[in-house]
Length: 118
Image (cartoon, rainbow, N blue to C red; front, side, top):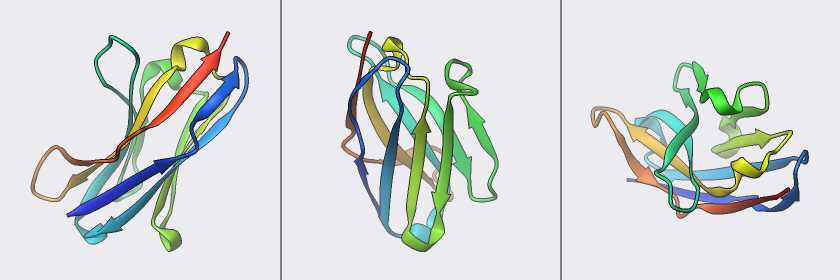
C-alpha cells in the first residue's frame, strides 16, 4: 500500500502561481508512475502530469509550458509547480500512484482545492 497526502492548494489570482506537494509513504519501491490529476466542478477527472520511475515526464496539452512536475527522492515528495494560472485551472488536484504490476493508478490522495480567481 502507498499513502499520498497533498498540500499547497489555495486561492490565487489569474496569472499567479502555486506549488502543490504530495508526500508519499508506504511501499514506495513499488511505484512505477506518479501523477497529478484534477477535477473541475461537473467535469471528469483529468490527467495533468505524470512522471515515471525512470524520470520520463508528460503533460496535458492544456498545461504545457505552465506546469512542472518534479520529485525529491530524499523526502519522498512529488511537486506540481503551477505558473500563469488560469480560471480554468480551478479544481481539486489529486496525487496518484501506479504500482508495479497493477497497470493503473490504484493509490490516491484526498485532493487539494485550487481556486483561480479571474
